[in-house]
Length: 264
Length: 150
Image (tube, rainbow over all chains, first blue to last red):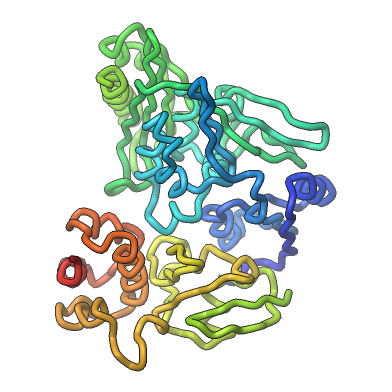
């Protein structure tokens, strides 16, 4: 498919990328391109300019601080995260990334791209919300930090505004996490998913049931299904699952994720 | 935009529009038609190539993004007309029917065997998740890869 005509810029520094994005209303940041290039083929998005982030070394890499906090650069690929010794400090991250799409997509697709596209069927938005990640957003006025719970605003919409970039994600120490999904084929697109973390109480974030991840808490894994039912979810119906079936899956998957988290 | 890429050891300098996908650049500009366009949606993997040692789908990369890289396509696998062991194994195990997916299958399994010369059957299958064979000839493809695994 021939794309619509588009300008291309490959900045060498985050400041330069921010300037390009701010100065061109029709500019879009190009991360791994594993979603954006395809929606451009379909003309679902038609940016006038692509600001390629692949030359920004500042946005790459994973660091592990002394207190166990992980800092993941937004342009880190799934494959890089899966192979990172540092990222093993929070094992669920690599485990979930290993189930996203396929080798080729994992080699190019980025952690930042996954959360910034905020497709409701993506894996990482609910995971980031469940484990209490914090997102750093850079703009003309400097940086600000947004908790994952406030980062996802709507379908394909996040707290990253025009002229801004997600630069990194901070993740607190922890191991007691779980993730469960029902997918189209093995490790395909999620029909419904749930991420859980246990830190005293159980914290669940459900994906695919609303425009943004839905948070549910319970005292124990045994109480998760009732807590999900009490949330009165009204997920969308589509060719893959009715709203009723997704509601059912949400309780089942939240329980599976919570049991996995509790067992660690 | 002027770009320079090295494909299968040969350097090409070309002027390309930013909107041109890498797969179209390889096929139309360089006449390297071994890499195929199956779905053009990033699902089928027939366009898989290795860019700077990394297996990618060339329908989801712009040609300008490949500027300065070293690209390997299916045309570059054999040397002096001799098939690689993997290509030979595909032949011997009848691991292709219509052959449309084969360039991608070969690149994905070449990348797998470089990283992991002794993959298990499950690892082979997982490595081929991004490659669709519409003839559904997966069994023989997996058998071919197993036969060259150490």
